[in-house]
Image 1 (cartoon, rainbow, N blue to C red):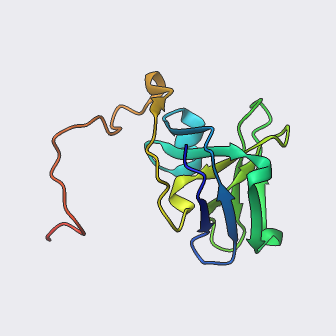
Image 2: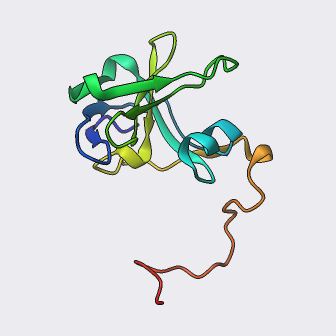
Length: 138
């Protein structure tokens, strides 16, 4: 799989990182925790080995939240803008990269939609809604 090093950052540009493959997984997750963490229908995450990841700026502004009832879920974000940033697994072996925080596109595509059974009823499903390249006309 793709081993190219990619850069990423938060919304305000305070936090920056670099990560390289090979990617362990690339998934759209529809679980309720990912929906709450993103405020969206799903989270799209790349997973990499922790030793393939490094912060390059703003690590001191990264905050982490771990729900007390979750064995493996956590979310990390910039304390200035709230933008999601990578999160190291509790065992420090892997890192979850919010794909939307990447400044470049990986050379791979998501492999699956997971926790599909718990998706929101209004979630994307390949429907025939109109598509616009930018904002829709008023």
